[in-house]
Amino acid sequence: MAYVYHAPTLTVDIVIFQLIGNVLHVLLVQRANEPFEGEWALPGVYNAAGDTTLEALEKRVLQAKIGLSLSDLAYVEQLYAFDAVGRDPRGHVISIAYLGLGYDLNLKSLSATQSPTFFPAAQLWDLAFDHEDIVPYARERLRRMVSLTTAARAMLSPVFTLSQL
Image (cartoon, rainbow, N blue to C red):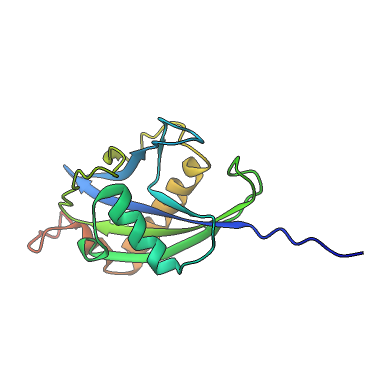
């Protein structure tokens, strides 16, 4: 008997944090298509064809969904692979999530962007897919990074005080 292999689909999501008025904010987009049309979500891209690299997908997310380039972010790292079955109604989808940090990010309004908006990261409501699980995971990673690395500097102006840090 022949085994039928059903490969999961790959997505890339990016959690972008920025300080606004000394409050940690996360960037969300309002989905333009189903599933979850009109709901808020992390910027992400679906790679149904499986024909490109993670880096290319990351760049596509930034450009198409929020009008930024990779160089606009002061810090980016691969965060985690989220793979819970049922996290996407389209089928088994594995999301490679990235963590990005920036200072004074200027979002560009392009025809393809999906209302990119910064929201206080501690006051999020239900988000599309499993993104309400991804954001706290990223916040915890950022909290650990702040105590162990200089990554927090990526969210501060070039000149900052120790109390801001």
